[in-house]
Every structure is written in C-alpha cells, then in structure tokens.
Amino acid sequence: MEVIIRPTTEEAVRLTAELIADAIRQKPFFKLGLATGATMEAVYADLAEMNKAGRVDFSRVHTFNLDEYIGLPPEDPNSYRYYMNKHLFSKINIDMRNTNLPDGLAGDEIAEGLRYEEAIEDAGGIDLQLLGIGNDGHIGFNEPISSLGSRTRAKALTPATYAQNSVYFNPPESMPKRAFTMGVGTILDAERIVMLITGAKKAGIAAKAIEGPVTSMVTGSAIQLHPNTVVILDEAAAAELTQTEYYKWVFDNEPKWEPYR
Ligand SMILES: N[C@@H]1[C@@H](O)[C@H](O)[C@@H](COP(=O)(O)O)O[C@@H]1O
Picture 1: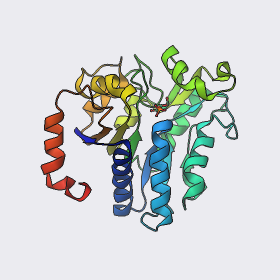
Picture 2 (picture 1 turned 135 degrees about the vertical axis):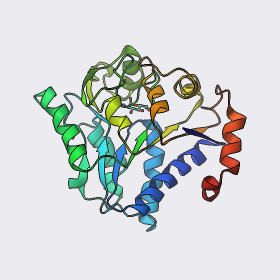
Picture 3 (picture 1 turned 180 degrees about the vertical axis):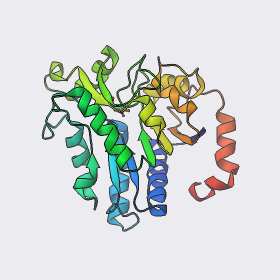
Picture 4 (picture 1 turned 90 degrees about the horizontal axis):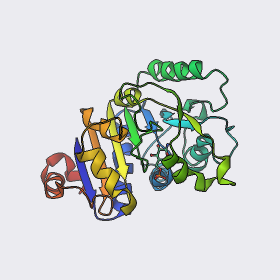
C-alpha cells in the first residue's frame, strides 16, 4: 500500500483524477469501478474537464459502481444512478450501455447480487476501483462486521451511515435502510485500488483504515490486504496518521511519482 498526502483537497482530488485518466490512457477497454459520496463529486468534475479537453477518452470504458440504495428508482435524485448520471456520465463521452450499477428495484435480491457479480466477471474484472470511506469506515456499503470475503449483496445500513447520508433526503427518514453493495471480496478482486479521503472529519477513520488492524469492524482496513493500493489524502484527513514523514518521503523521492509531483 502507498499513502500520498497532498497539501489541499484540490490537489488530492486532482491527483486521483490524473491516476484514473492515466490508467485509462494505457488501456482503452478499461473497466473502472466507481464510488459515490460528496468526496467524489470533485473527482468527477476533474475527469469531465479532462474529457472535454481531449485528455481522456471514455468511449470504450465500462463502469461498475460500488452500490445502490434498495427501493430507489433511477430517476430518484438520491439514487446513485441519478448521482452518476448527473456528476459524470452526462458530462463525458461514455456509452451509457457500458455503465453498470446494481438495480435498486430488483425484486430478487439474491439474484441481483449474483447478476452483478457475473456482469463484472463477464467484463473481465475491474481494472481500477475508486473508493471513498464512510464515517464508520465502510467501503461501498460494507458496514462494520461485513465479511472481508463478502460478495455483492443486500446490506442493512448502520445508524452512523444513516446519520451521515440521510441529510441528503427530504424528509431524512425517507432514506432507505438497506442497499446493494459490492462485497469486500468483490472490491479486493480489482486489479488496482485508489482510495481518496479528504477533510478533517475523516482523520480518525482514515488512520484506523490505513494504520490500524485489518478488521471487519472497519471494512476500509481491508485495503491493506490488496497488493496494489494507493490511498490519497489531503493534509486534514491525514492529521492522525503516524508515518506521515515516511509517506511524504516516498512520494517526493520514488521515481514512479515523479510525473505527479
Ligand atoms: N456508499 C457510499 C460510500 O461508497 C462512500 O465512500 C461514502 C462516503 O461519502 P462522503 O464522500 O460523502 O463522505 O458515502 C456512501 O456511504
């Protein structure tokens, strides 16, 4: 795992977008795993800008989102399908048929989990999975005590997640209590993981996920098991890390990071 700390949120976001764009440039038939949440909005704005400037082409990219609320139709402004269309898909040259999210309205939940797993497998697996982290340490909607081997399935949301995300719903109580999410095992199967964590509120959970023990209580800590992971943080989110001098040295000196410095 590598940890990169950038002085500002903008720089952390920009680096995340650059890594994604570079990866797509190297392999046009790219399978990109996507995340939602406030943190990612700026990443998608950067990617849309790069696409517009002709710096990255999404025409042959296939996307797979981590999760979707159960019970929300795609046109609901709080569905993750709506979020993705709004923040990214409508702004880039992607073929909408190549964009995938779990179907929040799927009647048979077991079948929907299997369908999504098969769709990822049929596409040849995910090349790069973008991740944020929830206040309770979740990745996707893999809440505390989710099996670290879990696959795509329906998952009940914790009170912490409810508190974090219900502010977007009107009324807040209309937020679904369950969601489909890729499993931790599904996420760990990706070829490469890029996690972005920004803001002072995430400093505690960032330190747990990056430097704490690998535990299903913080499913974000499972990234430590992945052989090709980079975590990008702004200074505020990195405030509780203990090895910051080392992380900074690596970014400032390792040749592979030279183009991004
Ligand atoms: N399911 C998503 C997660 O994938 C995301 O990481 C999290 C963080 O959101 P934010 O960036 O708003 O803190 O939000 C939701 O819960």
